Image (tube, rainbow, N blue to C red; front, side):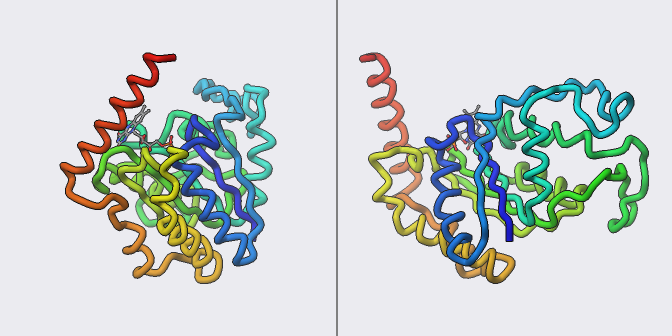
Length: 244
Ligand SMILES: Cc1cc2nc3c(=O)[nH]c(=O)nc-3n(C[C@H](O)[C@H](O)[C@H](O)COP(=O)(O)O)c2cc1C
C-alpha cells in the first residue's frame, strides 16, 4: 500500500501535526505500507486565482508553474492519503486549503448528478483520486467540539471526490506536542498513535477501543489546571521572546 501524508502545518517538522503523523506512519510502515511525507509549507504553492484557465484554455493544466503538478502525480499514485492539518479558525490551515483548491484542474466544468450519491450534484473528474483518506489534526483548545466543522469539511471532500473516509485522529490541547522538552509526557500517546497506524493498514480502520483511548486527556487534573499550565507556558514564551 502506498501512503502519502500531507502535513499542512506551516511549522513543518516542528509542528504538533508532524509529531502525531510520525508515529502514525511508523505504525503503517511496520504493517507493510510504503509511506512518504510532504510538508506543504515547503512547496511554496501559489493560491488558486479562480481564473478557470484549467477548465477553459488549457484543460486540466493550472496557469501556475510551481511544484503542484509533481505533487499531484505522487498524490494520484497513492492508495491512501493522510491529510494532516492544524485546526485554524475551526477549519484547516490556509496552506492545506490552497492545496485542495489547486486540485480543481482535475474537474470538468459540467454539472452532473453524483454517480454514487442520490440527489447530489458534482463535476465529472478527468481522473480518479486515491481511493482512501484519513485525517489527523491537533488544536489548541481542550475540547473536541472545535473540530466539528473541520471533520465535516473533510467528510464532504471525501464524498465529492469518491474517496473512502477511514476516520480521524483529533488531538485537543495539542500545543505542547510540538515542545521538545515535553516529549516524555506523550510517549504512551505516541504508542497508541503508532498502533492506530498499524491497524489502519491491517484492518482498514482504527478499532473502537483504540479510538476511545486516543481521545484520553493527556494532562492530569481539571480544565482549570490545564488553563493554568497553558497560560504559564504562553507567559514564559512571551518573556523568552522579550529577551531575544
Ligand atoms: C491562525 C491560527 C488559528 C488557530 N485557530 C484555532 C482554532 O480555531 N481552535 C483551536 O483550538 N486552536 C486554534 N489554533 C491553535 C492551533 O490549532 C494549535 O496551536 C496547534 O497545536 C498547532 O498545530 P501545529 O504545530 O501542527 O501547527 C490556531 C492557531 C493559529 C496560528
